[in-house]
View 1 (cartoon, one colour):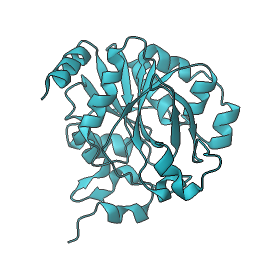
View 2 (tube, helix red, strand yellow; view 1 turned 90 degrees about the vertical axis):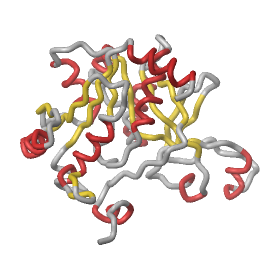
View 3 (cartoon, rainbow, N blue to C red; view 1 turned 90 degrees about the horizontal axis):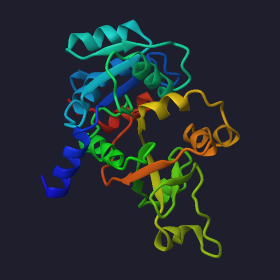
View 4 (cartoon, rainbow, N blue to C red; view 1 turned 135 degrees about the vertical axis):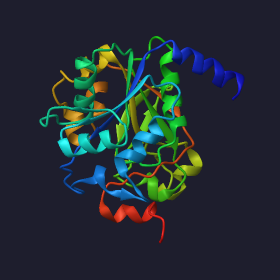
Length: 259
């Protein structure tokens, strides 16, 4: 571990950070997804074990609305918390965990429950954003290197300011490069895609869940636009790590080892 990494690790150790993995059973595109088998272990177990490797986390919790998931997490020694089944998003589920916890956590990190091989280094990188005491919310971005990804509406893009804060998220390829053929855009500008992992200061997280849906959020179907519209700042850190998310059954071929 390099000197800079050691300093960041020591700095994050001063904060109490919880890793929360929201997990619903009733997924529209893939019901029961957290419990599917991924090379001999359930999806949620693989995520939990990967997340637990992060040295910056004081606690790891699965936040679920389903007793089957909670019971399964207990079988491998994990911690699960039953949350309301009415939550519209993982953010709300995370807020309930933080609000009802007997332990005070300075930072909550919301980790996708459908990335079974998430690299714990991404969690450490995200946590390092909070060494800056002014950081309210943090997330990760990754440089886009293909036309397919740049113009894929299912892969949200991020616009950054000079402070590496997000100023907009969009399903469209932004910025639009006037006078340049779209197939040449990647050679003229550095585009970023959003990596869907968030960190929040606990007090900010509780505030976010009280905000009503916003016009830009409804237009793009991206929850984080609600936060930007209400004046919250989102710090970003750039990762080079690519993780695979399982959104629907057809995605399983990307990670299931052939027998």
